[in-house]
Length: 153
Image 1 (cartoon, rainbow, N blue to C red):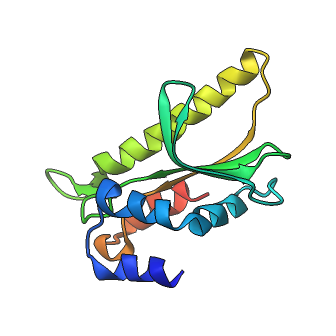
Image 2 (cartoon, one colour; image 1 turned 120 degrees about the vertical axis):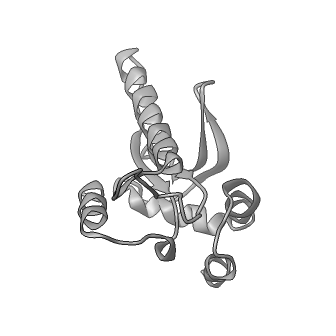
């Protein structure tokens, strides 16, 4: 966790490709910890970084419990000043492209997992996480606070 703290506090912006994924590859215990986001998982005995899913998608990280078929699928995105919110032309903010991309990846995975069940195959118990941005990049306004609170439900 100390190394993760150093990563987050050394640079104001982090690249998914150049900073986050290389760190995750060399710190598998951090990915294993993500298994705890799926309450159905009792342990972490399966772990992967940049895992292909069904020939169409790639999860940045997957960690889980094989015997319980309970996994946590993770999508990382850049952590820059515009990763989470982007200014609107007039005023206020919109969800940024990086956030939308990460969120859409998660939706695609859930769709793919649902099609397994429709095809008569066993569907794993899946928890999903999209990690985008850093707190000091976000100018919190009433509308952004309300929308992020709603998304976290």
